[in-house]
Image (cartoon, rainbow, N blue to C red; front, side, top):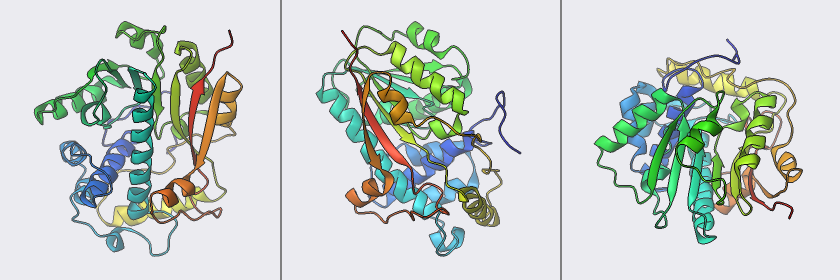
Length: 304
């Protein structure tokens, strides 16, 4: 069943389950010493999807859950997430070095950067997601004894609602630059919603603000590869439907869209990121679900 504009979910269903899957990948990458996210595995365990818990805990091997030679699978996802995590962590470190002390994590899901990164003194991290997601993560991480070095402020609001008003109500200052993250988000938005999100980010951003985003490039048969991978995962016990989570239709290229609105973007192809981190490359053919994706950072330079 495909997505609709007003659908709903939690961390164990539909698009919400991808947050748990991503956290499972970060947990496995932590076990493999590729990254360091001590909160990922406990968060996955708390959600309670057995398949993801077993992958996070290292109880499943790739040959049990992945199709041999396939362009996608849990192992490929874990490697990609390791590279992506390093990239976005470095983005926030560079933003801090540039003097930015406001951070906004959009659709934060089970992302734990607000709690695990060594933020500069005076940093405020705003986490935006649906109320039930924010409540679950905050309670779980607090119970783990997290001691964030930033002022982490939950903004419990659906991105389909008036999230800018909620963000401003939480203390966001439009007169100061901010660092924005849209990690693994744009591809799950309808094309017009992607544009609205980027427009709102631009409207709320002061000169010198920065943004990082993963940009999804649809491949001709990528859905078939994803569905095949999902079926193998279901054979291994996954009882969550993960196919058809995106929205069809052409969409504006995010980096170009940002450039037209005063941002100065830099594109990094996924396979460049993988190579830079010494990880296996994604297939670049039409069957690869994410092989043509790129990552984008951009700095806003508003006209005087």
